[in-house]
Image 1 (tube, rainbow, N blue to C red):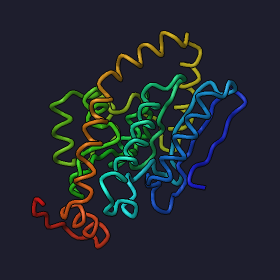
Image 2: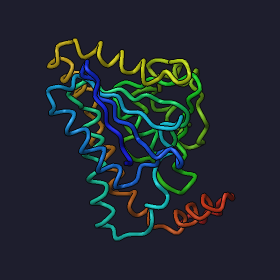
Image 3: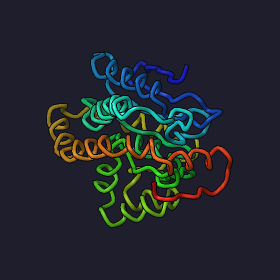
Length: 253
């Protein structure tokens, strides 16, 4: 299974990205599965809160390079409709939703973590945007969720220079809300999620809606432009360079 789902007696549902040998990449099939899992958790009255985490000591290495080949613009945009729905569900989730980060949250994994209203990271966690390394722009809402946490100037630098952010700095910047000891991120995330679940749900929902008010603009923007980038010669070169573990030679086309 690419996603594991477990629910505790206290009503905490844990959704685990489970392809540890590849550091839990997020391809289209996994996004569909995650969207379905979130929909089920949102409507299941036995579920009070949700933790999203990754198996094998990492959250997610990001988008699945094997799943990023050239397609028609229409096919790409259908895929981005799934992304938009998934990310919107996460940012406006009706129950506490917390990302628990061990190891790497890179590229789409970084974006997936920040789509959650709360982020708990291990002290050994690392965050990096990495999109431009394969000639793509950030997607999965990162153009909205990252500046909402750390401001536009710091966001611009991290997106353009692909600098790795270690967990202590992530906490200082606001990328992470809490730090846990290595191996303890999911446990702390679950405790915090259940604590938040005791609060009145309607004010919480309205607060989340306010802070997600600019998210749709970012999702529409990336859905318009990212398909063309995915089909570009530079993106093909980026994928090849990634697979061959070499530096890409981009030409701006």
